[in-house]
Image (cartoon, rainbow, N blue to C red; front, side, top):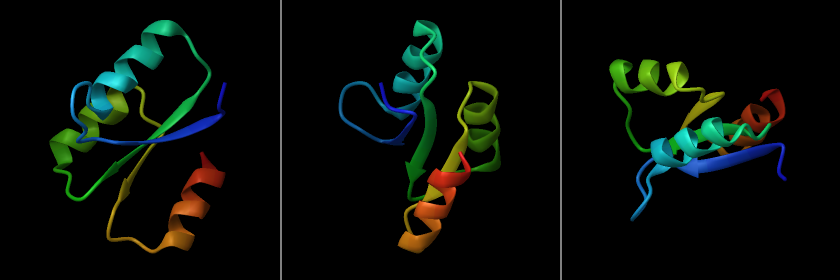
Length: 72
């Protein structure tokens, strides 16, 4: 069981928010960082309210993703 998972918001089938909902329902301790190219304030707020531990934009630098993952 991973401590942290980085999940793309837009995926075929079950999207990142769906994965987030499943993780929260199952009671897993895995913390989720959602990966996206663009996010509105409303989407970000909804993701955090649903239990996301972070949101990372795809245009950010790779070292920032490492820092984000470590912080989560």
